[in-house]
Length: 89
Image (cartoon, rainbow, N blue to C red; front, side):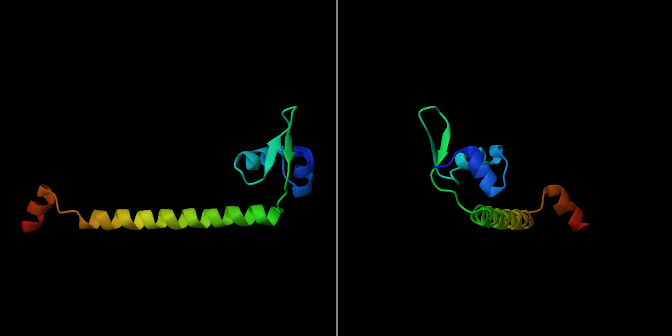
């Protein structure tokens, strides 16, 4: 088992980042009797980065799809009375 400082040194990350990754469930750890984190498994920095990049790509695709749907809805709305009367002139 490793402590937060050892993990941060191994991964080249700040200790706050390691704690954040533990809380997010990306690094498996549990608290000991003293209330300090003990890390069971230390993933490689590449594994952590790959997961983050994959999530970011999925989020970007989701936002793009949402914008597309919003645009399609706006185009499909019927014209308002003012627009209808303007277009008849």
